[in-house]
Image 1 (cartoon, helix red, strand yellow):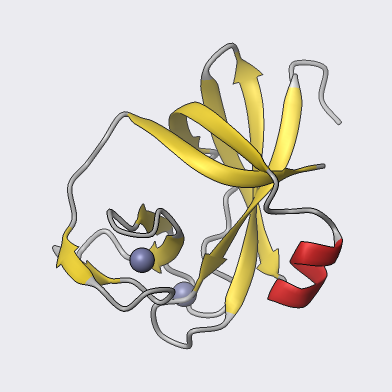
Image 2 (cartoon, helix red, strand yellow):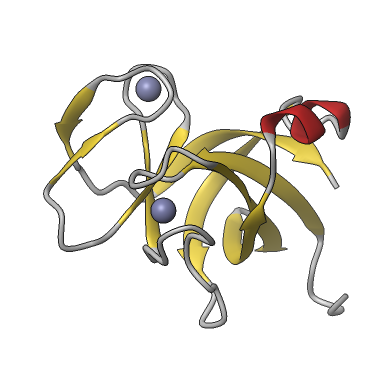
Length: 121
Ligand SMILES: [Zn+2]
Ligand SMILES: [Zn+2]
């Protein structure tokens, strides 16, 4: 682990194309900036066993240059649902999204700050 990492967490997401779940590893490098560094297939069952849904992280979210994108379809971004607050993978050429957790759809709006449900890591 690099020296400048203060804290790391894993946030659950679902793939917009395949509906499969995955985990996004986020590192806090400065006080309120989190970097998405890694994404990997993760079942919801093992996520709840690991306690991946117990913590709230907040601040600015950035993507590390090494972030590999969704492990199921390679989309390099994600959107947070305005209704249920969960993440669905997203490709930046799409103007709208539909949430793979609760089924709502809507326009994508950019935001600088987020609050996400994550787990300890
Ligand atoms: Zn995907
Ligand atoms: Zn939703």
